[in-house]
Amino acid sequence: MKNLTPGTRDFFSTFGGQVGAISIALITQAMLARALEPSGRGSLYVCQVFQATLAMIFAVGCDTAALYYVSSRKFSISEGITYTLLNGSISSILAMTAGWFLISSKLAFFSKATELEFRLSLLLVPLTIFSLVFQGLLTAVGRYGAFGTATLTRALVLVVAVFGLVWVGELGVVGSIWANILAYLASLLFSVYVLVFREKATLVKPRLSNVKTMLSYGLRYYFGKLSNTANLQIGPILLGFLVPKQELGFFSIAYRLLDQIQSIPHALATILLPRVSSSKHGRTELVARLARVALTVCGLILLSIAALATPLVRFLFTDQFIPAVPVIRILCLASAFRILTKIFAPYLLGINHPGFTSLAMGTGGVGNIILILALVPGLGIVGAAGGLAGGYLLSTSMLVLGFCHFSGLSFRETFTWKKSDFREVRNLWETIGVRLRKNAS
Image (cartoon, rainbow, N blue to C red; front, top):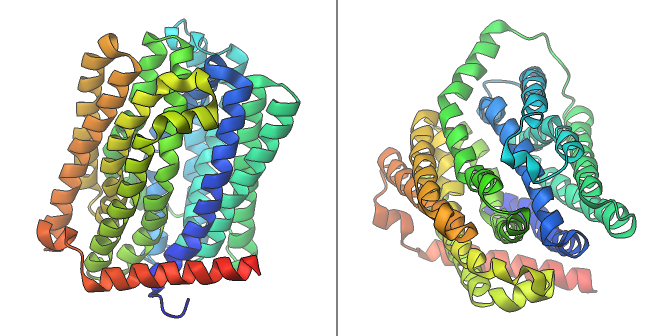
């Protein structure tokens, strides 16, 4: 990879794990669809949405704060781990306690899965918080290959566990939740191993001033995190109240399918925050280039998925899930907007503007809620997909404006392809070709 710039080389290292994870995830989702059918798939989805929402709400933005302060060298990796454990433990206890009591309520949302399934999913709250933060800290210390390996490890453990517990063991939704628990635990243990034994990280004595510093950053971004939760989860949450769990199953496979495409901009965003945080000027040209490449590559993939949605669903998920096709096509549009969110949000966070990011996410979240309340009663899951697309359009528009304002680049300069872009893409594909030929031989 000697012809590649450091940024593209790190992207290749990160994206390698993401590509493998995408392929494995499709196999996992296909097995779950066949084993659980639409009704069971809907039950699993509401449990996942429930625990993910709790984790986002109670983390108070401290996950992003840890990555920012370690990347910018304001905290050591040992301090980052120590304050993550401290904040994450408090957040997890609060989230699990709140979730435990909510499950006992008579809300219609909790009729979409059994009480055992919901309570078991609470174990995922601390695992997801620590696994994703520690995995992110790998990029803060330049361990992009380890980040990709952790992603691939989680996907591999998940597909094996789903095969054993759900496909062979026939444990249904409970088996699926246990499979996710094992997958996140494996990823977490791998990340801890690299940070402790390779980076020599240790626990340090917490300082109140540093706790306040992280909390201040987290609170400034907290509204954005809540709004991002609204964009991601409000549709499924409202659907949990308004539609049968079979329709939730249709929405879930559409969402999970499109979520795989987000691995591409996610890989780009992974290398962005550490670079932006450690750079005096925020690496504006790098951010603009990554936005152009991601939008073009992912746009072509999304157009292909939209055009081939019907045969794709039949092949991966069986004819039972054909009602998900219109949802997939609308979510392709939502994913196109979300691609730019994944690129520009890390830039604004990296130059210490979490407040503006929160404002942009908040605008999208409010728009999403309004659109869903207006559309879901009449259109069901199609309305939820439309609300998601509208919410992302609003937040992405504000993030693009914010990037242009803070970077000094015009809209035209940001999105016009340059000769160097084509050269980077060509070098990347040549490197991929060399790797594939070596593997084949």
